[in-house]
Length: 449
Image (tube, rainbow, N blue to C red):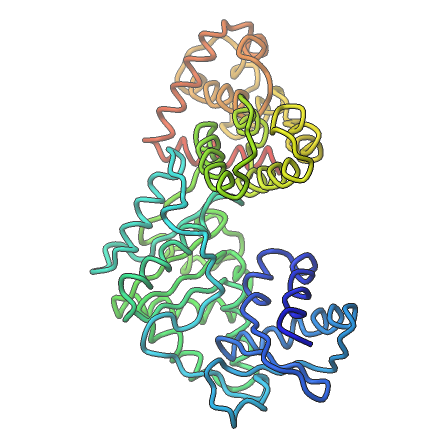
């Protein structure tokens, strides 16, 4: 078996374990040697070796067998280990002590996720600015920085961008970036192996702690307890903490109140759902990258605008659609026009069709604001009715395919200019009024659930 053989198997494993797990756990494995049915990988840390051994060894051995390679078990050695230590598998080794320079331990950082590649628009401008400030280093101005929002809105991108920037400009910092799942796994392992002192030493000696998807520790009492003490120790020492989640601290179900309170004590920033302009900007940025790979391909007029309109809920789906489109056009040797787009992305476009109705939005908004549906739709102009009415108009415009005149008919026969005014007013308010912004996000998530 050669390194090239392992490279082929890695490609197949990506389809089995998914892109995120591949990036975190499979990509860091470097083929070392194979002898006596034992395949040895070099890994950046014992933690990664242990995790892969316990969670992915069966997948790896099975894929190797499918490709004709007889492997009975896997072994892991730390990169740059002296030769005499290379026979010991990571599972039998103690966790490595934290280095005092650079990145202590990390989920694999994605090289693509930098500030330069992050497209900024109104929905994410505040989050981007806050992340930039933290990435500058220096005195801690707000602690923690808490980024939250739905899937595919850029939380992980900003987390990786901060890590890249800090590592480049301040390599002396000890920085720990990992997911909440990894935090929990390391904690449980430390308990089982009676290595809690090692665990505490690693987590409480860093200069920057970054935890992604913190909502996954909710409901795990012991893990929450340790996270709370780790958080307090770092804040008391003036160290920077950066957290991401899919919702605000107070909205995470089964998260202890004291943890939610501490998480909300710094700067809490919401990455709002992307608007049309931001989605179009993301597509245009990606096209610039792809035209370097596919210089002979041409994108027809209106294609990007069409995609930005139709695929509206998830940036990852949007970017994946563009990747597929360029690959398909390259294979068939055709221009990327509307016809090719419809043919190539038929399944994605069907899945992205908005099935939410104006009537459903009206019912949900009236329930949210505790007003009667007749008052929401009716002619009364009291502020307690007018603002929820405008919120419902905004949601109807952004979550359905109905035109302004059609929406107006469903709001008591109002003129389309009235609907337009209501939508513009909410667009203005959601940039300055956090209450309106939170209401819109909660209603949107509720409708999409």
